[in-house]
Image 1 (cartoon, rainbow, N blue to C red):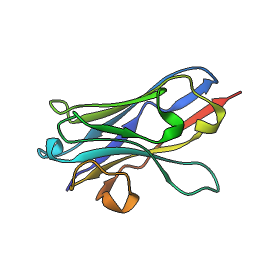
Image 2 (image 1 turned 120 degrees about the horizontal axis):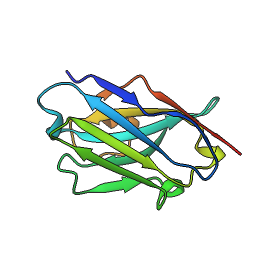
Image 3 (image 1 turned 90 degrees about the horizontal axis):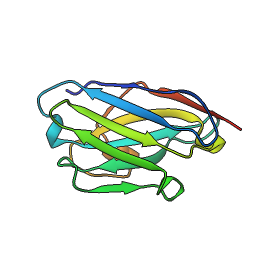
Length: 123
């Protein structure tokens, strides 16, 4: 069982930055692929970024490439999402998730989810 708690969301003006954190419980954090998803009002939850258990491999949604960076610290059981050059269309509830199979981009590949942290970007 893995419990995930996100933090770091908030309000920011367009062009600004935020850093999301996701703290995980358990001693097996380093064996899970980790991902960030987001869901805007009235829209489906969508993939944002994922990172392999070792942290060597990452993959991003096209719309965030070059602006967002996913990273992890296995010693601290934490995964991060650094978000720069934020746009109003980045406004959403951001979720952290853990996948037993490793790096993954599909929602159904993830076994555990956090409760989400709200990110609001104003124009």
